[in-house]
Every structure is written in C-alpha cells, then in structure tokens.
Image (cartoon, rainbow, N blue to C red; front, top):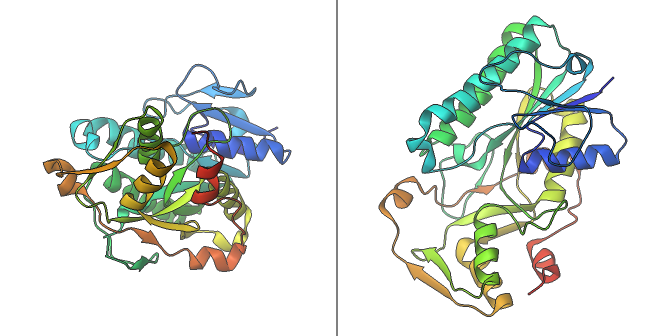
Amino acid sequence: MADIGIIGANGYIGRHVARTLFKKGHTIVLMDKDPESIDQHSNYHQIDLCRSDKFPQDLKKARHIFFLAGLTGTSIGQATNRNFIETNEIGLLNFLEFCRTEILQAKIIFPSSRLVYKGKKNCSLNEDHAKNFNTIYAVTKFAGEQFLKIYQNCFGLDYVIFRIGVPYGNMIDDKLSYGTLKLFMETAGNGEDLLIFGNGVQKRSFIHIEDLANIIILGAFDKRTDNDVFNISGPDILSIRQVAEKIAGKYGVSVISVPWPEMAEKIESGDTILDSTKLDNILNYNYKESFAKWLKKMKA
C-alpha cells in the first residue's frame, strides 16, 4: 500500500516531488485529471476533483498527501474565474471532505503563493506580513489556506502550508524552465530580444525546482511544521531586469523596456522577497542550485 499520495502528479511541482520521493524509495499513489501519468508511473489514477469524490483506496493508507493540484495564473483568472474557483477551492474542499469522512490520518501538504502578500519595496516578507490580493488566483490560494485551518480546527486534519517564491529549472525533461524564466529562455534562445514591462526593478525570490522539491518533502515530513505556514524563498533575490540581462548576455540579445499593459500594471505585486527564516531554522537546508550556476549549465 502507498505511504504517500500526490494529487496533481502531472503538474510542474508534482512531477518533481514524485521524482524525488521515488528516488527515496517511497510507495506513492498518484492522481491527476489526465488519463495517464506523464512520466509513465504506475499506481496512477485519473480524478476530477471538481466533480468527483471517488478517491483511490490506496489514499486511505497514506501518511502524507501532497495536494499539488490547481490552476495558476494572474490576469487570466479574471477571464476564467469560475475555473479557478472550481479547481482551486471546490476541488480542495472535495478532497478535505473525503479526508474528514474517511477519517484519514494523513498530513496534507499545500503549496500557496508569494502573491498572497502585499509587496513592499526592498523588504523581506515574513509569514505575518500584510496580505493583498490583486488576482483571482491569489484569492483562491489564500482561501485554500483558510480551508485547511478550518478543517484542522473542526476535524483534526493536519497540514502544512508553503508559500513559494518563483520556481525555475527542470530535472525531468528538456523544457527550459517555468513561467517568466521559461518565456525569457525560449525567446532569447530563438535569438529574439527580451521585453520587460517598465524598468523591471521589481524583485522576486527565485528557487530551483530541485531545491524546492527537496524542501517541500523535508518540511512535510518534519513534525515541527504541523499546522503552520512557512515561506520557501531560495538563494537568489533578483529583479526582473537582472534576470533578463543575465539571460540576454548568455544568448547575445538585448533587453528592451516597453510600457506596462494596463491590466498587467494593475495586478503587479511589486517586490515579493520572501523571508524563509522560520523554515530555515527547522530544516537547515543547503541549496544545491543557484540561478547563476543553472544558467551557466544551459546551452547557448
């Protein structure tokens, strides 16, 4: 029987968490909305979180369940708000009801986002920093956090919440990266100049996906994280311009500033530099990757 469950096993983080856990010898039951596992894993189950409460029997024996399913995005959330609410909120509530009614003893691991915070220029944001929600996505992630707290208080379901910086990189296939970094790498790799909105001075916390997967797993298994919220930052604090200039330099293209699109400017969070001291003091994790090391290894 499986000792680990991963819901959202075909997603970017889910695939890397599964890869890391398999290497450690764990038995895993995997779930996602697709008919098959992208990585051809066995013990995979197709499930529609929004419309189904038929979870695999193996899940009942799991002691840790990584709930990594969900939609991500910023401006797209307004146009597809129902999808975000159904997937990120109703889907999670369906899962929590399953846990409650089946009296699961598992600890639930939930990824939240830097975007729940109110950005502040050149300021590290700890877990108690002021919150602000510029997107439907951010609202649904914070709602998910509150659902977990409610079910813990009312029904004793244990959890840990990780608010994550900007992940990048890939340990599984040849996809270059994720999000903005993916766009920059693909654009520069095609010999095209990189466009940044405004002056690009807004700063982010960046973390390689290998380190992120390791930290999520270590944090999940540590009892000291039970029923609490933690930031996962990473070793690099970089502005969007710095990232663009480093990539442009490697590929021999230029960085061009363009005016902010109206909607993008309205939902921009500003600096979101995560302070991960709280989790660092528990795990004492040594990062394996940095942005500079990763970029140097990429083929120009």
